[in-house]
Structures are given as structure tokens and as C-alpha cells.
Length: 430
Image (cartoon, rainbow, N blue to C red; front, top):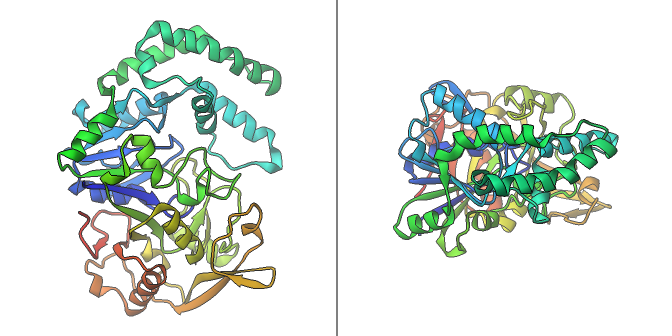
């Protein structure tokens, strides 16, 4: 079987979009398996930037079929806008290039309204969500109240589901959050417009389609959203996203078995970032963090929020490798570290007067950890024009080799800029 899972190995924003775009040149299918429009995958081709939130990052390759699987929460309004933008750019001219599972959960305006109202009501205790409605949509799925993509094409069943849903949602919006309710008929009219546009992308059973593709020896990439440390079960709870972001979620969200997977590629920056609240041991809340932020353009493509920045955290990275079963790494944004006199790497944590090398998962412990660093000599050379691995500066090579030796898995890809051509291949993908 030739399935490859691409998973974020930090707190998200690692560069999964670029990796999937580059990998898609060799793939037959690209499957988005979880998350929603809270994702922001930025692709740069020929100096032109494309930001995707729901459409898989393989969409720029016309030979690749892109699938939105059952594990995704589908903001149909945002998806329609995204598709229109792609078409205006001359992309997605063939509707068969994008297929959507009938089993995907539909995210509607009331999910966004509830998400934003809840976050605002928390005040200083905010989680730091994107406000895109992801949590409330997954809640509906778990409580068996969700509208599924297939429901959009059955008017009678859809009206019954929405009428039932709005009784609860409008009560919360009016009486608890003191906001305006949603009118059923107006919502139905909006949905009719969205579903008409999206009907050409409907595929009833994408699980079966993926299974057949893998059985036929096709090359399938599985693309997730966010990062491992934001996982609902294994992340820095409660400062996490609303779905499982791990490699195992690719199997569940897509409806396939583990025997179909050839490798799991973990994506990590050469440093670490985080958006929103929550513990972050290696955060540099100083001039170094600001320099990384500005040079790396560390501002969210979905929200525009500034990302918190700090040094590479090998304790957290090893944890992500373990819980995902990561077999290979892609090291992103190495070029951002050019110009630092000294570069640090966290190899352990100090907590309660003792050094530990295993990532703590008990609530509150990570917030009390202080990083234990090893220091390396930096380099001044601009890496963005390098096209051969051997041409990397000596100290950059030493840094990469140290990371690879510490995590004990191969680094297959090194990114030294946002463009496709700014990618150094250590080893072929398939």
C-alpha cells in the first residue's frame, strides 16, 4: 500500500500546506481528513500565494484528485468562497478534481456565532480559538445532532434537522449570550445557494474510493490540520483544538485501515511557534522571539494573529514522534535562523529542581517546565538560494544533523523558503 500521512509535529503552522503541495506532484490522491476552516495552509508557486482552509493542498496539481473526507467539519459558506477564488485564479476547472464525503459534518453560521460568543464570555480565561465554529460543530457530531453534507441535498430532512437545532441554538444565543437568533427560512435559503454550488463535488462514499485507490496501488497523501500538541486527547488540554490531530485520525477520518499506510511524515519548523493561549516552554518573549516572528512572517493565515515564537523543543518533538508513529521528518523554515550568532535547542526540561527528558502530560506540569538548552554557533549565509544539500553552510548542516541524531529518525526534506523550488530533498517521497 502507498498511503502517506502528513502530520504537524508541533502546535500547528509548521508548513504542512507547502509539504503537501510539493509532495502532491508525486501523488494521485490528496485527502483532507480532519479539522475545518480553522486551518490555514499557505502555498507559494512562482511567487504567487494561495491560502487554503478546506480544499486539500494538492489542488494546484491538476492530475491529483482532492478529497474532503468524513472527519472534516465543512464550513460550506467558506468552502464556496474558497472554490470561487480558486476558479478566478484559473484553478479547479474540472469539478471531478474535488470530491466531498456525504458523511462530512456541516458547519453553519450558528456554530461560528456560538464559538465567538463563548470565547468572548471567557474574558481572561480565553482558550484562543479561531472563532470559526469548529468546536460547536464537532459537539453536534458527538451528540448525534449534526447536519451532514449529504443532508444538504434532501430538503425535507434538512428542514427538520435545522428546525430542531435552532430551538437549542437560538435559546443559547438569545438568553445566554444575548445575541440575535437565526431565522430558519433565511438559513434554508442560504444553504440552498451553497448546496447548489457544491453539488458537483458530491461523492457519497469517499472511504470506498480511497480504499479502491490504495488497493490499485495509487499514491495517496493524507493531510491534516493543526499540530500534534493541539490534539484533543494528547495535547496541552484545555488549550487544544476540537479534533484529534494525530496520524491515527487520518485512518478514522478517512475510513481506512492502518495496514494501508507506508509512512508518517512529521512536519516541524527549525524553531517553534504557537498561536493563542497555553504553555510554551521555549517561548522567547524578547528581541529574539520578535526577530523570529518578523523574519519568519509568523502571522496566522486564518486569523492574522501574531504567533508566539521560540527555539526548537526536542522534548516536545520526540513526544509528537512517539504518539504519531512518525517515521520521517520534514524540517521547515531553516532559512529563518540565518543571521543569529547563537542558536539554541531545548533537549530537556527542568521542573521542581530536576531535569526530565520525557514530555509531561499531567495538567499544569508543562507550564511549570523550564527549558534546558544546548547552544550552537549560528550562520550568516542566506539559504534561500541553496538548491543542493551539500551547499548548506557548515553550521546549518551541523544543526540539521544534531536534530536528526537526537530524534533518531531521518530528515527527508528541508525547506529553505516558501517556494516549491526552495525545497531540498534528502530522500525521495515514495
